[in-house]
Every structure is written in structure tokens, then in C-alpha cells.
Length: 289
Image (cartoon, rainbow, N blue to C red; front, side, top):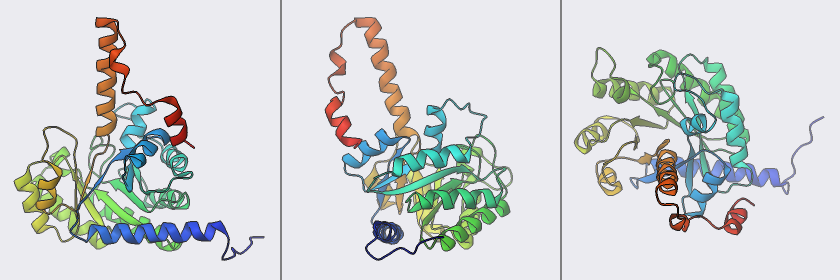
């Protein structure tokens, strides 16, 4: 028999906080004040991002896939994404946007069930793409993705959590036939907003003139995902009309690049002078409490 939650139950406070975070996140998307969403892949990386001062943290499905040895052609199981997100959420204060990878070849009911699971863990936002992982598995049909958006939206309503839904359209990565990437992004953005999405994110686009043009056409908050350098700086992106800037797996790849450099230096020079920026063990232990 289920017991009703009392008003002094900590679960009531947690649910109220989760709803408040979702409302603030949605309001922020429409505020005209752009913000950055760095993306974590495990507990340690999420704590470091929060400790640096980020109030909104994303979860990168691609980074999770790579850290678990998934190949480029493999899809990460939704259960693995949910499990990783649940571990990140344990005792975590910032607003978290959980990523469900891509809608391609996934039933809308699967996407809805995964969304419900990450909402139960305390997330206030849900994201997924209209392809597989990072555009590696082709693009799902517009109709299918719209159905997934509707299903995820229904899951948030059923959970009574006003979670914010982010959808990535991979047109600039995939180069779809027929319409241009720009036209495809506009068409899909309109369909996803109509289905219930709160923000459309466009990976693979970093030309500021095109971003400004797209922001002027898309009738809703536009997100840009930074994956390559050189890239426009944050101020320029905000001025172009971008609502948020996500980083996907870029932070993880950047750190792995540093790790490779350090590994090469160890063999080349045989000294340990380049390890001085390592986080002290006691600080890391404190972060993980």
C-alpha cells in the first residue's frame, strides 16, 4: 500500500525544487539572456562542472558511450543512459538536462519511458536528437521525431514535472537530400516546436552569419552545439540570437586530448612536471561526497 507524502516529507521538497528548476530553465530560454550548458558523463565530471559555478549541467550520451567503449556504429542502451544519469543525480543540486541520445529506430513509447525514468531521478530537462548518436546513424523521419517529442511531453505531464524538452536536429551534420541543411533545420524546428519541444539545438553549425539568420527565422529558442574549434565566442553567439550553447562531448574530447599529450610527454621527457594541475585527492573526495 502506498503511503501519502506528508508536507514535511523530504520528497515533497525535492519535487518542488525539481519543478522550480524546470520553470526557471524554461523562463531562462525565453529571457534573451543566453547561457552555456557544459555536459558531463559521470559523477566526477558533473561535480567539477558544478564546483566551477555552472547552474545548468547537461549529460552527454556520446561521452557516456565512449567512456563505456561503444563503437561509432553502436547505439547506447537507454537503460545505460538512465543508469548513468541516476548516479549523477544522487545528491546533485544544479539543474540537469538528461540526454536520451537519438530517436532513430526507437519507439516513442521507449523514449517516453526513458524520459519518465530520468525525471524520477530528479532531472528538470530532457534532450535527444533526430538521428542516432552525433548524426552517425542517419536522420529519423520528421513525423517519427515529432511523435517522440509528443510522447516525451506526455511523460512530463504524467509525471507532473514541467520538464524542458530539447531536441537536436542533425541537418548540418548529415547533409540531408532535397532541402538544404538550413531549410531542413527550419522545417524540423517548426515541427518539433509544434509537437511540444521547448528548444531546438543545431549541432554542426558554427558560422555566425548563418546562426544569426537561423535565429531570425526559427520561432522559438535556438541552441547551438559547439564541437569544433575555432568557434565563435559566447558573446557573439548570444548577440546572434542564440538562447543556449551546449558542448556535447567536446569537454570530454578536450580532456582526453590533454591526457594523450601528457602520456606522450611522460615517454618523451621522463619527468612529472606537467602533473601539477591535477586535482588534489582530498578535494576530489570532498566533491564526491
